[in-house]
Image (cartoon, rainbow, N blue to C red; front, side, top):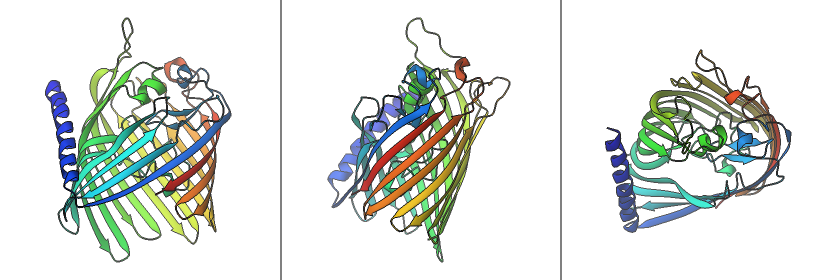
Length: 390
């Protein structure tokens, strides 16, 4: 069964890319857009030299991105962990069919390259229903679709205590339903798919000390319901999937128990609320990931609460976020992080903004992973970010 799945992935992906290229070649209308973030930061203080991050990076460290292992360490000011440029193309093949491709360029780990984060076809069934197929981001979070479009939110980055997991995209299909009720808009999205992540940097660099580790997700099925108007937004999210984590330690190396490719189950629950009233902003989001693996936390709740205010072209926001893993008889090394964030955003141009942010993370992980005193360690980070859309 496993070999058939692998064969299916190897055949399906190039076939879809070929179909997408053929469609684009026959498109009658092209639209190009893009976005960029030029972000520099410095860790001013902290600990964590003996943390799991300290095995790969020069800690104290601040983890700014789980998905690409974007880490600020004690080497001084750097723009490498988060800066990026992306270009998106939308091609209308006919009145009902369109193709979308997004190409991202970043240099997180001295490995500058472009990646295809989006590549999908959309077929508009009618005014309410549409079907999409291809590669998309997994919409586990409120800002999942705009996670790297820094211009679309106040923070330098959505708080990583909630925003970050080992797999962030899927190859599959989804169905969208849109309608309006007076001033309110309703959006429902259901998706299915799978994803293989070779040499997954989330596991390899952040948790396993550089040991090549693979993460595979299959049988992904999820849905969210989004209700919003000009001032308020509400979203509920549910997803489930099977996953396997496989270490490749090399000759003579030992594999961590449970990270041998064995499959186990995962469920994700989430809710979000936004408000924008009379220059006051509220952002709140919670989710909980539940896994059955004996080496993983049985439940990992996380949350964000943020309050902001606009003063003309300036917006200030304070944020508190937390990631808190539960323990079980087979899992006694939880990761527990608490982060306080202060952000100032200056909208000096209609399509560009400058942001200043201070983050202070406290690692309260008891008896950290692998016997270390904490998981990642405390850290204080200052970042400056110029963001734009074009």
